[in-house]
Amino acid sequence: MFIRRLNAAAAPLKYLDYLIEEPINAVMISGVPCLVKVPQPARYALHKLIISQERDVTAADKKRKDILQASNLLALLREDRPGDIEIARDVLTKRGASWVKKLETACKEANIRL
Image (cartoon, rainbow, N blue to C red; front, top):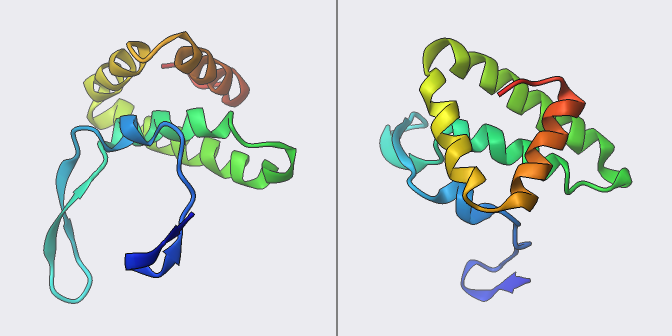
């Protein structure tokens, strides 16, 4: 889809509403530091796992990258903020059985325990 005011093409992303809901503040350090809104890290990790299940055979490299990024982020969160993972999963579970199934399938493929 072409967005005229940005003069750019974009593809609608599934599950984006979950990712961008309740963002957190962060500082972007590039030139002049500024405050930005970013997704919650735990939601980002779970979103990556779900999206990995949407990838077709031609996107196997992207799928592996999604799972690796999610796995690394979840490992870090388990050490520093384990409650965030539980909260993100609880919110995701309320989105429905298809969401949960995709998450569980990705976790099995990646040997990740939530």
